[in-house]
Amino acid sequence: MTRDRKYDAIVIGAGHAGTEAALAIARTGYQVLFMTMNRDMICQMSCNPAIGGLAKGQIVREIDALGGEMGLATDQTAIQYRMLNRSKGPAVWAPRAQADKKQYRLYMTKAVESEPNIDLKEDQAVALIVKDGKAIGVRTAAEHEYFGQTVVVTTGTFMRGLIHVGEEKFVGGRRGEPPSIGLSDSLRELGFEVVRFKTGTPCRLRDRSIDFSVCEEQKGDLEPEPFSFRTKRLEVDQMSCWLTYTNAKTHDIIRKNLHLSPLYAGRIKGIGPRYCPSIEDKVVKFADKERHQIYLEPEGRDTNEIYVNGLSTSLPKEVQVDFIHTIPGLERAEIIRFGYAIEYDCMPPTQLKHSLETKRIENLLFAGQVNCTSGYEEAAAQGLMAGLNVIRKLKGQKPFVLDRCEAYIGVLIDDLVTRGTNEPYRMFTSRAEFRLLLRQDNADKRLMKFGYETRLIDKGTYSEMVKKYENVEQVITALKNTRVSNIPLDKWLRRTNESINTLPRTDLQLANHDYALKRTIEWDVKYEGYVLRQLAEVERFKRMEKRRIPCSIDYSLMKGISREALEKLDKVRPISIGQACRIPGITSCDISALLIEVERQSRVSRETSTALRSCQ
Ligand SMILES: Cc1cc2nc3c(=O)[nH]c(=O)nc-3n(C[C@H](O)[C@H](O)[C@H](O)COP(=O)(O)OP(=O)(O)OC[C@H]3O[C@@H](n4cnc5c(N)ncnc54)[C@H](O)[C@@H]3O)c2cc1C
Image (cartoon, rainbow, N blue to C red; front, top):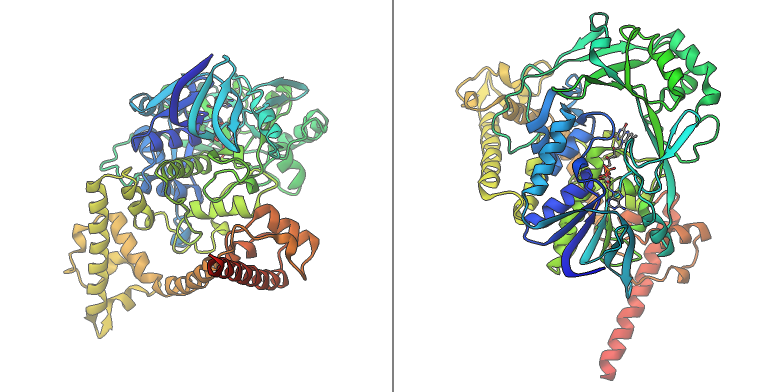
């Protein structure tokens, strides 16, 4: 059956990416068909019930400043807040919140269902409909055809998902949910490269079967800070998490049963994340470590399920029971759900432009784990960016792209489309060369103007942000102009042991500011010198980004460059010299040759158009 109605956008998959995309597009007035396999599982957290963390916390703040939903959803459903890395420099402070898994899903479901421009349908997309090189719709398992001006694919770990637990294997997109069959074949037939990745999850335990008295308690922050710049008041009754450790006995059991692990027995072919290894991997690769940390995290307020962070495994069920019982506090632990690994199809992201539109097919965008990433935050960020780019496309405007010096989201997307990845990609602070500028507390200053321009951030919120930073500037100026014992207070504040709370002058109206704002002022002052140095690097970076490479460039005409470099340039088709420099394996000699070729081809095209003009 064919549906006559034509949507502005079709978003496939209601995970973290799809939901941000659909909400952004619909909230700006466009009609969205939001298709997902199970409407009761909108924004289900497949793995740990936590949002944020190192580098990911920064991403959530950025999503929030752009007008996304993740930060608000977290503040409404959190059960514990912790600011990570407090003992380190401000660039790496990172907010993390434990969320109530079920409440988070319900919050997002309500957000989607209350959006009048979203038409939520439970169905499975099995093929794309493409005409004249443009995506125009999807065909579904229920044999419907739907048409739209743009199509966003956000299918996560579902495409040809295959779950492994020991020697058992069965198809599934996530435990208890069917896989998505057909869509990745359709994409392959359209000429896309498809690869196979793997990820895994630990078992879940029943809380009352755990002896918490022998574990270390991890309480939330005394003064929790909201994730969203739009959350005015945070009242949260925080729950504790608990820490315990594996030991020699645990490692022994795992080692003896390695042959039963689908990963070590060679049954899993997909590539897994190195930085988030299974316990089997940890025991083998870090053989000298006597113990590994295990965090016991409640999955919510009204559930007795405990997530066992650090113990991802695909060993057989009986082995999971055996090794769990060797861990202090877990001697009598009852496993409610067993750990498993999942293999799935995903799309190498070098097939995308910075707008997340595919290079091969116009009006088709990919976002989330389907782009070889891992993590809710990385997925949500891509979903929002895909949504913002759909809006731009529908308005006939040029793409919305964030630079590496503007946002972690810029780093994420530039890394994906320029460098690609050969394992599930997750964000780290070390990936961001300008991380001193990309602090979690200043994401609103960096990005809220874009959220406001798109009308995803309202005027009141935006004006408040502007006023806040005017205030910051005023205080900093006052500090610079105020001397105590002939030392300007900004210099005084830069001393190692001083802080904004120990200022010798109390008449600078600092008392009117909250703790977070005072900290922002302190960081801006203390790190001003480093920031200025980084800003000089940003200028250099921008100069290289401004040197554009015409999209019509014919790399086959290039001379003095290796075949391998030519293939890499042709595959990525960088838009600037700066981006070309970041392609792995491209050398400074290749860049010199590229600069000459860009100049030569531009000269030829200038001469041709002059000749054409003089002929007319
Ligand atoms: C077992 C497991 C372990 C994980 N472990 C971690 C971890 O340790 N750390 C971490 O950061 N992340 C982990 N993740 C990843 C995290 O869950 C994902 O990164 C995140 O959920 C990706 O979001 P997404 O929106 O891209 O996709 P998902 O959240 O997977 O959502 C995809 C959505 O698309 C829908 N869908 C799929 N195909 C179709 C179709 N053809 N038609 C219609 N709808 C479709 C699905 O129903 C689903 O709603 C894990 C995931 C799994 C499954």
